[in-house]
Every structure is written in C-alpha cells, then in structure tokens.
Amino acid sequence: MDVFSNAFEKKWFWVFTVLFVVIMIPLPFFYVERYIPSLWGLPLLSSAGRVIRLSRCS
Picture 1 (cartoon, rainbow, N blue to C red):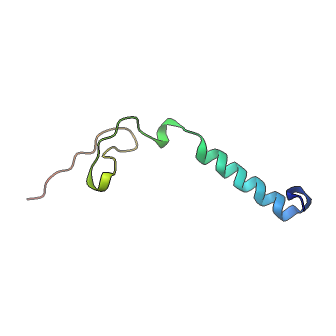
Picture 2: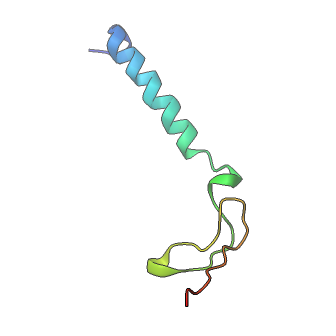
Picture 3: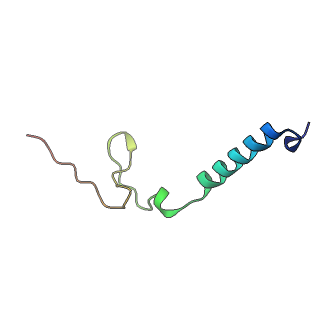
C-alpha cells in the first residue's frame, strides 16, 4: 500500500515531512557558534548570543 493512496497517510506524511524540514534547517538563531560551558555542559549563552552573567547570592 502506497503512502499517497490513503488520505490519512497522505496528510500525516506531509505533516511529518514539513516538520522534519523545518527542524533540520540550520538557521543561525537555532544555534550559537561560540560555546561557553556552564553546569552539566549546558551553553552559557542566551538565544540572542549575549553572555548570561551569573551573579552570586550572598
């Protein structure tokens, strides 16, 4: 049975295909080029590319 022979399968094929393409496009706001590690290896950069300053609570 072909994917395009059933309307239900055709709809979900296109939904997953569009989501896959959108997720896999390497747009610059999805990643940062410089990596500053913090706790557990998470990046210490915000989405705008500015360094997040951690202040110590006393």
